[in-house]
Length: 53
Image 1 (cartoon, rainbow, N blue to C red):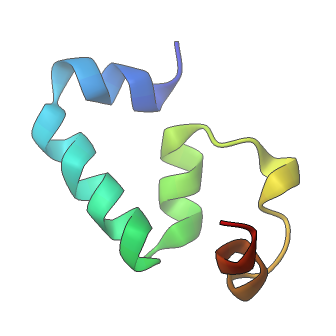
Image 2 (cartoon, rainbow, N blue to C red):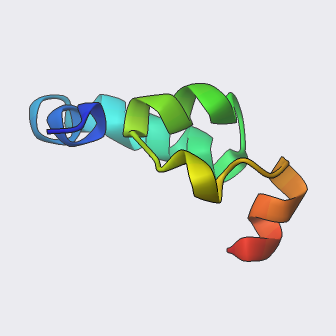
């Protein structure tokens, strides 16, 4: 189980905060690590990430 999934089940509020921060692109790398996001998609800079979405 990934840390993000554990957070989702045990601490829904913390998970929601993380998702809000992720949408606002604040502390993106920290959130990426917490959520266990696959690295290869996100190796580009933030601008490129926005374009991908």
